[in-house]
Image (tube, rainbow, N blue to C red; front, top):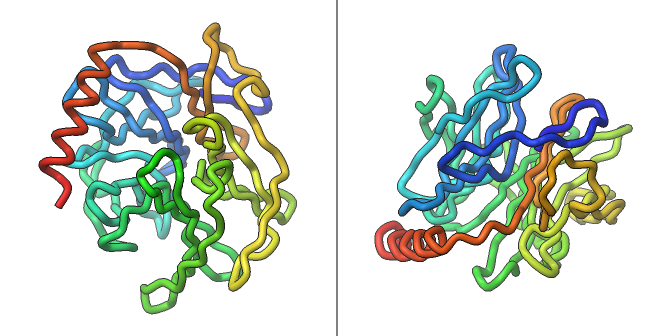
Length: 276
């Protein structure tokens, strides 16, 4: 879903072969792009990373940008030193890596590995006062439980930490980039207290390191948003913005027995082949 200048959110159509989730916006070489997980349905696969370009007042056709032998989601894209970088969720690979775009649309190379032998998801970055921080979520793989971790990057390329911030399912899992407003920093998280991705939580950061403190300033559910769609939304779990442009993802209930069977087969394939 896309919104501009406080207008109602309007639908960005899914591609015909997937559901889009975890939207991230980035401006690169004069163009604005929307990156997202494309969850492939009726197939033997799970998520790949796709993108579409903003043109003529809307986003164009989805294209696959990154496809690996493991599930990909949460395509945290950003520009640093003129390069387009991405830190996608790839817990089935047991690492958190940074990739650099070599050539559009789908040529990426891994340039860094932040964490090895670690199953972290939804890794999100913050730069403040010359320091770089890493928020990431360590799931228990039992329901929606897990721990929010905070690391601080060191000058030699390593990291300090982690600080264990919270295991509250109502606000632990990251839900988008950190936000700046009037000199204050806000962390976006997913509300999974009743079900996965039921809403968003915005928390103001009071202190970062070595003692982390924050307080919740707002909780948002789909019913709180102006959305141009005739269907009832059951959840929203990612929020990002670029200038006056805002994006969210919405969850709907669309039962499909063939999708259920495909998901069961996919789960078995990944467990047997790609975990090790």
